[in-house]
Image 1 (cartoon, rainbow, N blue to C red):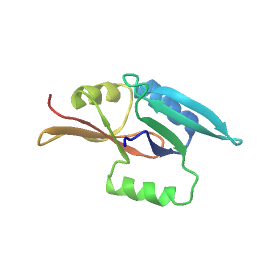
Image 2: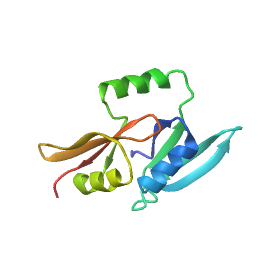
Image 3: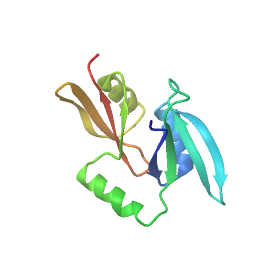
Image 4: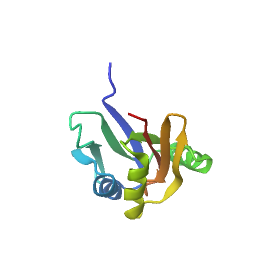
Length: 130
């Protein structure tokens, strides 16, 4: 068994695609129309094009808003992405205008930081020593 797909709920799929590809550096894998405005829209790491896909899922279900707003209020990230160097990625993303809610923080052997993905979610990045 392996993880093939996971998702983040997004307010606007076009805006999310732009942020996740142009700012974070993921690449679009699937873009299939679903009805009039929604799409089956996934991105992957350019380093692992056959790896786990991230679905940029429309946030239209009524349960999504209270779930996400509670996570944001409590400062809890919806997802976590691995990076080689959190501090370097923090500096790169900050330079692109990304708003961080937690600057790089060493927590034992792991360093983390948390940013706002502009689409309704907090996302954590993490790196462990090599």
